[in-house]
Length: 424
Ligand code: AMP
Ligand code: GLY
Image (tube, rainbow, N blue to C red; front, side, top):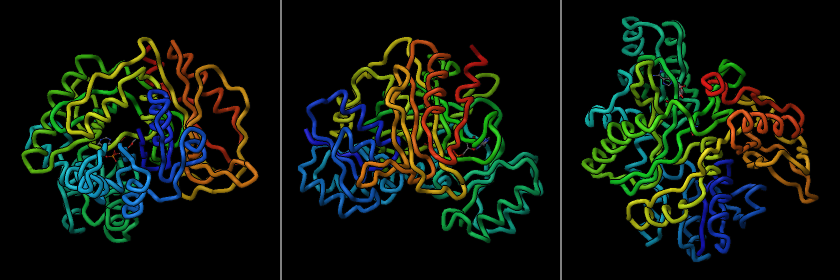
């Protein structure tokens, strides 16, 4: 079996690591991968966005299964291209990936399928958008419709902030074309939960529910980031909530996508806000595994991932996933100086030879010099995942290991999982 994992972040390291555990004899390639994947797989120096070269590599290396990590290549049609060449792929078509790549499209799907989500309006005209803001209650959320690497949503406490956000996105085009169309959305109160489902387009198999920490600083303050840490499972996600998510969110979305001629196969990610009454609303859909959610969700599995990937890539329903009972996972993201605005590259990284039991370090933005020195090479640098039989232990081990890894300017949160800790 020859597997290709497309992407080079912490999520793709975790995917390769989980597949390596389940398929010790498989040949695994990563494009482009990173120094972490280089230890368990063979990296190919091909950018995830380089569709032509990825298709060529799949051919040259006789790849039997491709897993596409990031949304960009999916939105650009990588899965369509590989499938057209007869290859087994985990990841949706460009048409189905619009559930993430166009928030306007996602809202249309939700409206048609009766899926609960924040009230919103779409604008391409700044004056009309500003006028709408004038007439609506604070707080408001301003969102770029297109792909914006986690930076496309601005929660605005006041109308003035919302007006600023609109000017930035629509006039200054700070997010490029992604901000040409914006949504103005009602603010939802509650607890966020990420529910990731493997699907063939009809049936779903849920991964353990997780919670991301989007804000840069302890206590959930500071700017939004790509994610500073995550934990799983989340006690808010009771079996009942997961059943409702399946019945009221995932299955209706899949049915609506089929109806629109864009069947979705791969991983459908529902970002939920669960209100005080316990009702889930959709904040966003993603067309892939979450980052850094994957780095806590996959380490909790004890089997069934590779088989499910093979099945959905062959158009069959996913098989049951096996999860370790009474295990908790916490990941702490180590970010570079200057992240998220202007991450500084180049600092030398030192990882202690021994880390607490159950700790795995997934690489994200790193590179290795020819002499073996490991260096910072991106905003999110490393993801320090701890798995333990108790939540507090997983939290403490992830934090201690994060503390012990050194590089100049290291930023990390010391409170990953604080909401869960409060509940317990
Ligand atoms: P998104 O890019 O849509 O995932 O939004 C990024 C983050 O902004 C989410 O994870 C939430 O923390 C926050 N957010 C987005 N939309 C809303 C909303 N309608 N109400 C409250 N918070 C939101
Ligand atoms: N962690 C949020 C995302 O993957 O979009």
